Image 1: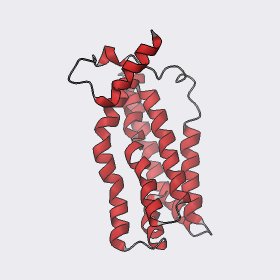
Image 2 (image 1 turned 60 degrees about the horizontal axis):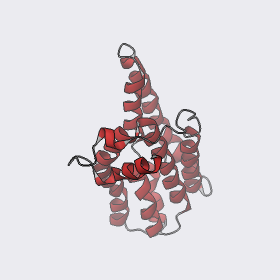
Image 3 (image 1 turned 30 degrees about the vertical axis):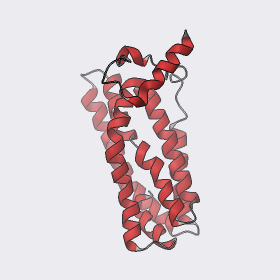
Image 4 (image 1 turned 60 degrees about the vertical axis):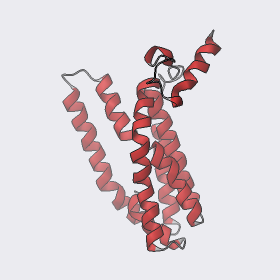
Length: 191
């Protein structure tokens, strides 16, 4: 919904075409460098917990995007979305974990169909809303709301987000990323 409107909104805030292009590219650059970390993090803490956090932080990014009043705030608002909007890849991984192998192709096919429909209908709806007064802000707020609504149905997540990281990556292991050292703190608090 928002992607086709980003350049126009950046220009309305006073950004040059070059700056608008750089801001647009920042999302892809952040995705490139954060995908491995978020994927590893998802393996450690669990798909549901990481998906929930990515959904909520993406919602925050869209809320900030709608509230941005300067080029700097606009660029800053792209950071949480660029780092944490790995919801599609984590959702696919979660589907693969939850669905039995026999039904997996059908489930992933339906998921991809729904995703493609969103990529088709979203820009049309965003373009229509952008023509209204305050349309970009409204579009960003709707995106934020959709993410928040998607985060609402998570009964199994409560209490399930804490994982004993030391069993997956022993603390003495050279493969234990610094990002996941919080597992040691959680483990010590349990004792």
